Amino acid sequence: MELVVTLALLALLATLAMPLAELEVQREREAGLRSALREIRDAIDAYKSAADKGLIQRKVGDSGYPPNLRVLVDGVTNQRKPTGDKLYFLRRVPRDPFASADLAAEDNWDMRSYSSSFDSPSPGDDVYDVHSRATGVGLNGRPYQRW
Image 1 (cartoon, rainbow, N blue to C red):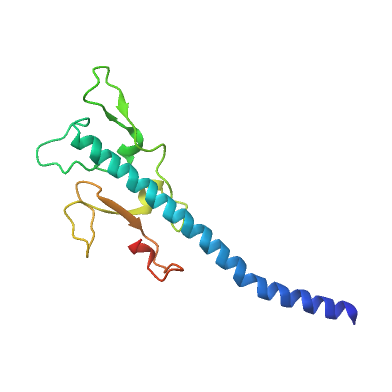
Image 2 (image 1 turned 30 degrees about the vertical axis):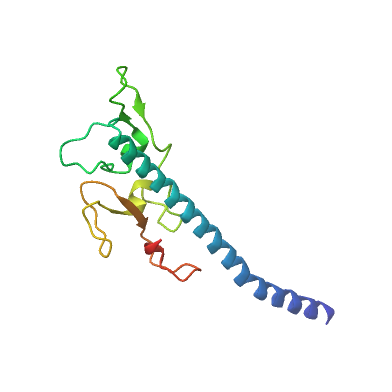
């Protein structure tokens, strides 16, 4: 009888702890998403700043934003260095913690071009911003796609 009571108490404690564990996992994934978005957005801004300073070759009419996320990792030639040194903005493209593991890190993100509107972001000739493809809602009540 004592064993049954002990097992019942353990089952009750496990039942109470499970939602807390799930909440902690969600918090960690959301912190990873915030961090990844900040890292990518900082790299996009650094690329744009370098383009505005004339360090990156631009064509007439270009916005100055990177054409894709891969160029932030592969680097671009510094136009002010005669040795052809490259400027790098990311070591690697961070993964979206809510995205599928089978996709490449660059394909985890939805991209917004400079020419698209805020209300209906769409990809284009450049990458002005990125957002998650996750369809869920965060603990703060905002959809992950709006972070």
